Image (cartoon, rainbow, N blue to C red; front, side, top):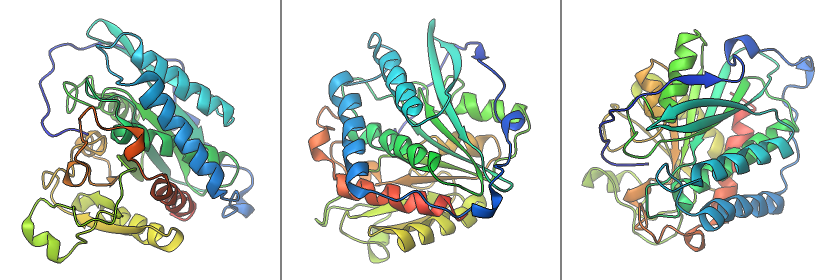
Length: 324
């Protein structure tokens, strides 16, 4: 997640191993068991989340185009993790500043109609290990994919690990989610909603929570122990559904905000790319720089994260995705 986008001057061609999206959307044959859940083993989820964040933020560290091999190492780890969960991974590969980068996509067929895209970016700004921003959300993405592989869902689910979300790519054509959303639009793939996972690991019960407007402290908690569900007015239906679902299924509280797209930083993640292409999209976030003083700093390390809180976010999203 970032505050100010920077202009891009370099483009690149996109290559994809095979057409994905509209042509691959098929219903599961087991439609009579659409609400079946895989048991949620909290300890396993905690351990997996920690393992993913540790590899990305400690073993690799900062992950960006200017640190040699860091993005490819992260992509290889993500692909391997998807493979272990039983998925065949598609790479959407394109050229950026003369180097090759990739989005990684897996899909889980649903028992009914409709498509939901769940995404998280795996790059960081230079100089930060990016434990919260955004290894926490990428870890959540990997766990959601793993859990859904063992249960049935109504909607067709597409899980995407996006490259190049941070500056200088944000908002421009080399942004990974912009490349992917553009492809879906070109292929005329109808998407019910895109869910952007953006920093889901920093929670505490201290009264440190800040907001875009001071008056919001009278409407929202002062303590930094909730998960935010935010979206634009067009996406308000899914802001409400996701908030209610997390509150129903998880012990962590979800707070919702529906606002104009350029209010308070709600457009500063991969959901922006989908709004730009006319899709509904919602961001799930711990509120980033409104809470976490380690945002975009070298202190954004694994020891600052709350894995119990992260696990509850994953639990809430997992159960909710079965219902929407």
